[in-house]
Image: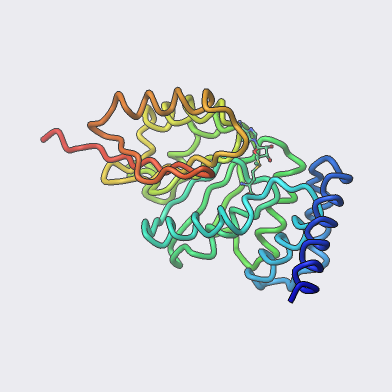
Length: 239
Ligand SMILES: C[S@@+](CC[C@H](N)C(=O)[O-])C[C@H]1O[C@@H](n2cnc3c(N)ncnc32)[C@H](O)[C@@H]1O
């Protein structure tokens, strides 16, 4: 029994040391590892290969723990239109897409062009088609004004998105939330906005929290965990 425990501890220590030695996050290395080791077309294999990579390499992917919380939210909300800020290598995009219904659609935004291409390739390798998702290579601030025209055939009368995942720059969380609201891109009958919390300081979230607390007519905090905050937006009918 002790031998098993010691072996597990040694493995964990080795993985930790390797992550530390490798130092910086490298999106090309993550992409190459996943591309060459996963079974193409199998979503679960893609996610497992990402998790395997992250055991011994620094990684920015949300990983399996936050991933499971995200899955629970997607299963509960059952969104049709999802918006993601921070595609990175495509891990969270793939996680989102695998739980969407056939008519569901994801728009994912990535600032860095090389990262956006690698992320898009991972999403395609997972078996998803361009009819199900779109990667926008620009900043979230640049993407927001373009979203109405991209949200489908009924773009002009679009009801907005049902779920937003923000995992990009925490300093952009509040300005992007305000811009989404201003552009009427949050579905008025209900939209969940997930803010991923990494090692940010409490101040990074203060602005968002103050905004939500000042707008109890349309915002509520649904879930608050160390790793994630779920805000629920609903605009009451004025009629
Ligand atoms: C933490 S990573 C996202 C990880 C990803 N959600 C996953 O789990 O695989 C953050 C990504 O957001 C991108 N980013 C940073 N600021 C951005 C912005 N203003 N607009 C769009 N993308 C941004 C970065 O280039 C980076 O790839």
